[in-house]
Image 1 (cartoon, one colour):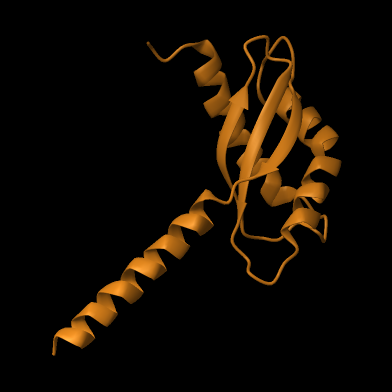
Image 2 (cartoon, one colour):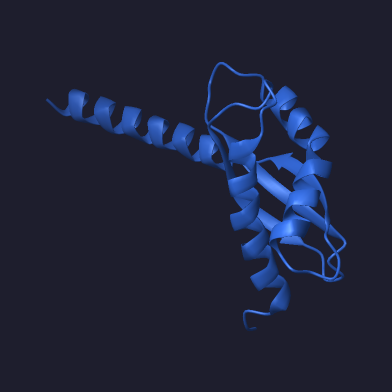
Length: 120
C-alpha cells in the first residue's frame, strides 16, 4: 500500500496544526503540547488530532477541552494555509502513549538497578 493522497494531506495538516497551536493564547493550553498523529477521513470532512502534553502539573483534560474549543479557529487557519476543497472539522484527543512509554522505561531502569545491586 502506497503513500496515498489522504496520508499526504494528514501530514500537511499535522505540520500546519503544530504551527497554529503555538499561536493559541488559551490559558488552559500549556506550552508543551505536541501533535503525535493526525487522521483525516477519506472524504476530508473530519480530522482527529492526537496530542501529547508534557507538563506534569497541568490538567490535561482541561487542556484538551481548550483545544476542542479552539477547533473552529484551527479549522479556519488550516483553510487559509492549506489549499483543500474541504477543510476538515477537528477533534483533539489526548495521546498518553509517550507518557506510558516513559513510565515503562522507568520501571525497566528500576528493575535493572535492583538486579545490579543484588548481584554484588
